[in-house]
Length: 183
Image 1 (cartoon, rainbow, N blue to C red):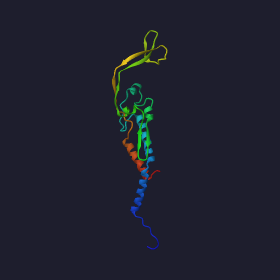
Image 2: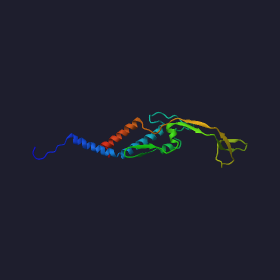
Image 3: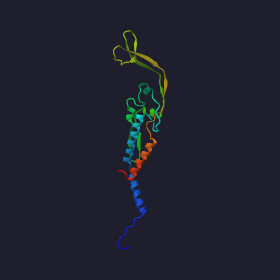
């Protein structure tokens, strides 16, 4: 062949493609951030539906039954506290609330014996109201009561974790990032 020629082999193309993939895989912070956002959305959905990562219903709480409310959602502090942190090769999800662990994993709470002060309103006829009132309420009477030691067993109500769909979506995010489908 006269003049000039260029030869490109499949090995060269594959090596350059692999170099590009390895380069993108070295810092996947943006992909991990996207996975963290997806995980946050999944957790919010679990609180809305009252289910664990496998789609199983949480055991209803006594408060939710008594108030016709949602389990693990009274004021929404636990739900709103769930955050994530992404770095070059991982994403972590969690909460800093001290009571979060018992709700996620379940367990037994041991309550020590104690004296409890309650305040109720004293009516003119000498009877006490059944409802508690503030100590500063009009005609308020405070009384002390002994509370025996007891235990409370909390069932696990997992809200953190990955469902099968979450794992698939996370894999797709990583694949799209590494192959350069999005930048």
